[in-house]
Image 1 (cartoon, one colour):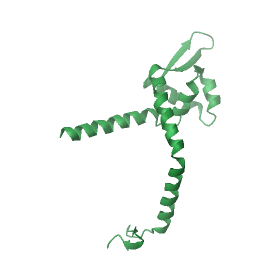
Image 2 (cartoon, one colour; image 1 turned 120 degrees about the horizontal axis):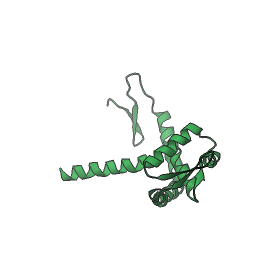
Image 3 (cartoon, one colour; image 1 turned 90 degrees about the vertical axis):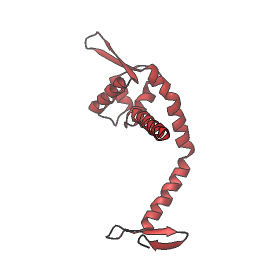
Image 4 (tube, one colour; image 1 turned 30 degrees about the vertical axis):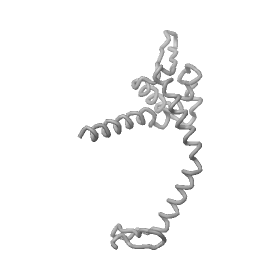
Length: 144
């Protein structure tokens, strides 16, 4: 039973880690803030495909999760800057490693996708939801 709980805890920890960077714009914001603090409009210029509303939501959620810190300066109009928190900076190393891994395995991923897509075209699905399974060159139906 202890082993099952340990596996469950590890799975939950993995899910928590992935949720920190799962949002479409979080990784880009982390990269943009790496050199130092930026104002919202500067982040918006760096992320031309993101709406102002989505950028604000992303920044707020990252602030809530402790990845960025928001500083409001008492000026007219108010000046707001975002910077990476210590926790946000600590995420850059693992994120960089993940990016290197993705780059190193890009060709293998593309090959796997082509094989899968090619196999999916060769495996028709019948109206009953049963397809054919290819095993060692012989094709058999799922009902066999």
